[in-house]
Image (cartoon, rainbow, N blue to C red; front, side):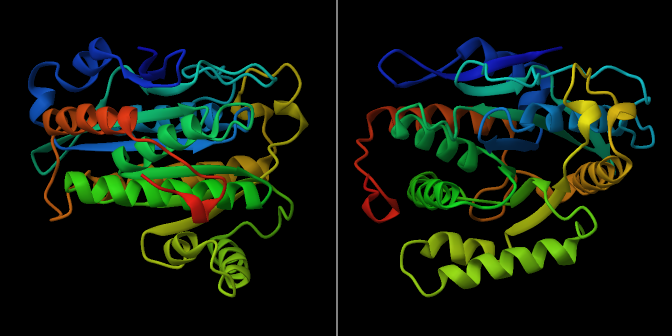
Length: 315
């Protein structure tokens, strides 16, 4: 199994759907009738998105096989999505793990997919490409992780406001929720002694307080203070992971390792809470998602965007 590209951008900046990936992932045998969960990660490149997803893959594998949740052995090299440190970046688009994890509860089966959005916050790319990729990830996901370095900055607020605006428009058009669950995951949090849920909530409250006086980030403020959003804090993983590391658990600082374990075990342990649904809260199946995906990509291909800030988003 390996990551395959589900959506890519062509030379003109248009989104293109990989039909063979759609067939492989969503329409293979009885999977097409299963409800599904889609864990999508967006954020700036080279900030640990793929590293995180590879450990999520390990925990999901345990869940699928009925084993106690685990992030693997101490000295297991990390594999899966390309995750190396450096300036190079994987091809822009949405990448999906080629095989869903099939989990079962009370005789009901669900397919769980893990997706990585490359180029969702790339200042060297045209802004409309970043916007389209991330809005598509938001509308597809049932659990969206916005991976942020150190703290929420103006750039990320700008993008998030635009993602939400476009996702709401598309959601209304396709009977989908614009957002089911958003987790703001702050990486390299400076205060490693205060990384608990209460610390994260206090941070989000503090940040949204600053926004309430202005009109630029209405959707961000409403979302981050609402029931669909959460925040988590992870400190720096330690120098052992930064120098020629294979991503092993044994290379991590203990504080980081414990918090990473808690974060992933909570996500995977609660996975049944994050089934993909429509606006009526009815389950969406893999086959239904394919139809939605094709239509949404077509809309995003043809939609003209004109914006320089959140206040100028138009479709």
